[in-house]
Amino acid sequence: MIADTVLILVGVISLVALVGISYNYSLMLNARGKIAKVEALEQEMKTLQRELKELKSQMVKYQFKEAVPVDKGVPKSAVNTAKAEAADSPLKQEVWQTFVDDYNNLARSMDVPKADKACENFVRNNRLHLLICVEPSDTENGGGTPLYAPVDEVELSNFWAWQAPGKADVFVVVPNPLVEYNEELHNHKGMKETFASNYEKGNFKQLQVKLPAQFTQRLGAWKIVQPGVIKVQ
Figure (cartoon, rainbow, N blue to C red):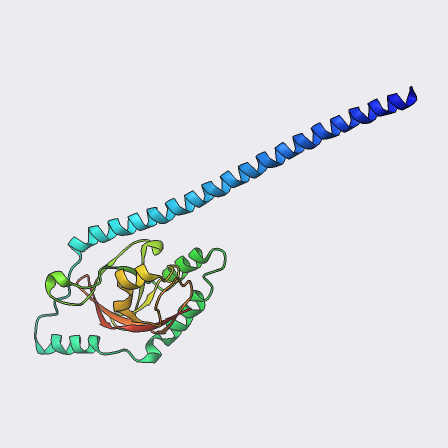
């Protein structure tokens, strides 16, 4: 009789344990399902953010392409010709070297938290102008010069322009280090027209400026005077 009672108790305990294990397993599966759903939602959110950024960029391009002024030169005179030639001549390295060194230090730290805030501070502290290329080649006006236009947000910009000291219309230009360097940026957003580089294919999040590009800005029209040199890695 005692043996039968023990067997019954063992059976009851085993049954309770089995129910508990089944319940815990179902909870674990449910938790995994919730985690998978959260991860899927996060991925969808990131995709939507990228698409929204691209849409905003395309809207800005569309708005500025019609309105962007084209630098057709200055009226010919002895004074204006001399000023134009001075502005179009390459800047000496000592003019831009400190700025480029600071920029390269910033560009090397794009994989750290709050890199976007660091870029915003750099833009503000150096009073940079934010630009995009609205037309890699100005085919409508019969030329091969890219058309550039200003934007208001750091995340929308592809180029940063720093005014050369003592020169009202001469600017040193570097890429926005926050923007991943890829085939789209290289071939369709004016980067290969603005900078020579070692880029062939792939995606890169690190870059270094070897030589900044030089732009002029006259009456609101941005014009590339000398392409720069960058290295992606």
